[in-house]
Length: 256
Figure 1 (tube, rainbow, N blue to C red):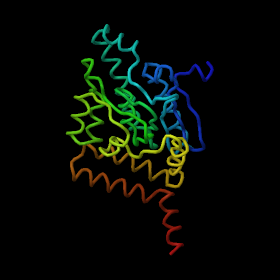
Figure 2 (cartoon, helix red, strand yellow):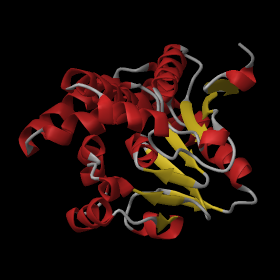
Figure 3 (tube, rainbow, N blue to C red):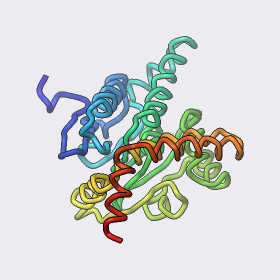
């Protein structure tokens, strides 16, 4: 299959893996094929020791508009068992993003709506263009943004989460940044260059330290305070024993 016919594309930019949703005519809507392609790309990139970060983006004018119209029709006619299987596939994608060792960055240009907004929110970081739009319009058709709620509740305040998921209205990039849904906003005209420069900053950090940091951040999410501290002690000791840390200390002391 030629690249132009693939639902998801993978490209390497040095140590950065770019995963591109490639259905611009359908606003990169999610299908089983798209979800499977993203998951395969994540696993393959994470198994490559050269990878320092992964960028998920969309081709054309939009990041991802959520479920494909044909998928919505299928959902309305599916059995309970079929709907469970379908819903779990999205859950497994969101879970995989957290399990991937390296940082996963959503580069959002245009609209990120419903499941597409969920996909962006599930990434470790979200970078948006100034014209990007975010929203969870599911309630307008009697649906619930249920799977993403666990992530959204951790990204923004309870009050803002409630507003986003019950009114179903879109917000712009700047507002998304203000409420914590987005990390950075870059100009539309220079978006691609600024994204590239931003993620290549991971090449200047210790890969082992970043991997341990990501793992610990999500691991302590469900722990009590004392357990979180004790887990931090364990990771602190592991970090001290890595080659990166030992070499980093030597370099630091030599400068002194």
